[in-house]
Image 1 (cartoon, helix red, strand yellow):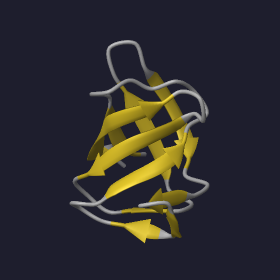
Image 2: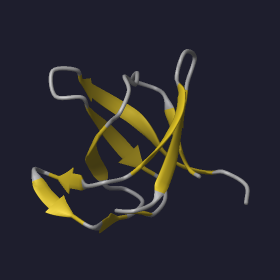
Image 3: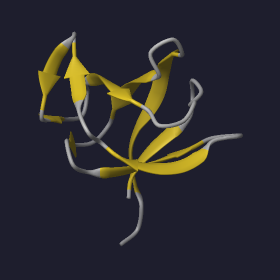
Amino acid sequence: MAEQLIGTVSHWFGNISVAGIDLSGPLAVGDRILIKGHTTDFEQAVSGMQIDRQEVTEAGAGDSVGIVMESRVRVGDQVFKA
């Protein structure tokens, strides 16, 4: 299955390893995502996400979510559903 662009990293909170992601497509807990950028390229499962500090199980286009990352990401990195 081809990778589908579903968002862009808008914020990076290094002290808690959380990325703020502006979504352009649907995303749910349990999905696998691929983060690609100039120096970023890794895949991970979405173990949880928040909107305005509230836990959610799914989100869609237009939502801004926070997701704990396994590695550092950078503002502008693209997020794909793997």
